[in-house]
Image 1 (cartoon, rainbow, N blue to C red):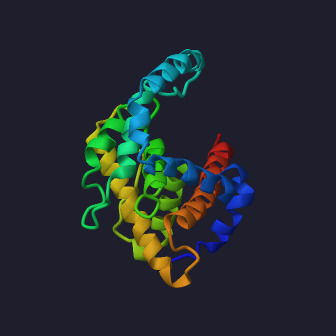
Image 2 (image 1 turned 90 degrees about the vertical axis):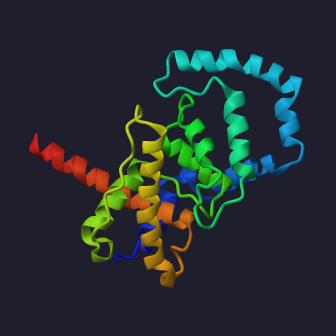
Length: 219
């Protein structure tokens, strides 16, 4: 298995907006949902009134945006809060989470990359973030790693497919990422989903660039 440390070390320079300071900030923001008052705030009349003031801004943005922001903010916050409160089952990490996953992927603007980010920031030790870079990286590693022989290429699902298919695709990503991580445990640097995400993001970007360059040369 190729050593991925070199890719992880390039992450901060390649993606400064997603470096550790910003990542830690998001973790801290999500931790607010651990407050006993979080559910009371969500159910309060003042929260509903605030949403009425925010909705016009969201509607304006979505009028000209190809990537919509969810207009049903209450449903989003309620679902993410529920995801955060679930205790992860070691036998199947999605136990207790399937209905919430299914709900999130039906909400405006929430495809698998965004939902995987929600799950990761709510439970960073149990769920990786996936996107097109991670998809490209997984394909590259499967192609050139004998240890991954027999693994299917994980692929992002089409937006219009069922929630069940999207969960199936996410599980396929997790299966490959977990195997890659297991193969790096002795190296210690790539020992959690955060460090793995750094490595896969950089490797995937390089693979996508190589593919694009190859295509452009054939045109």
